[in-house]
Length: 149
Image (cartoon, rainbow, N blue to C red):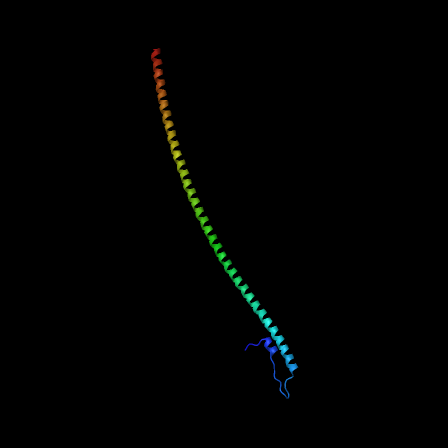
């Protein structure tokens, strides 16, 4: 049976004819018990509220911790993805640069071959010119020699 302060205050005792209880003493004691019980109930209610508040705060903190862990994991995942993307992009740029360098080198080698061919052609033309010029000079020399005779 649950006893409230009001139950204690309203409790009535029957007195005995001889050597019974003194009603004022009983009432005084019951008042003191009632006050103490009220204080205990208030304290108990306050403590329950504090426990409930603490549990709510603990649950909220646990939720925030969970969210922060999830955010940290997401940030780590994004960081790894960014590193991988940067690495892939760097590899792609390097491969493109190597292809471009090979292309430039091949063009330079082709140009060297072309210039060598042009030099050989110019030498051939020079030799041909010198031969033709000598032949022309010889023919003119012979014509002058025949005319002098």
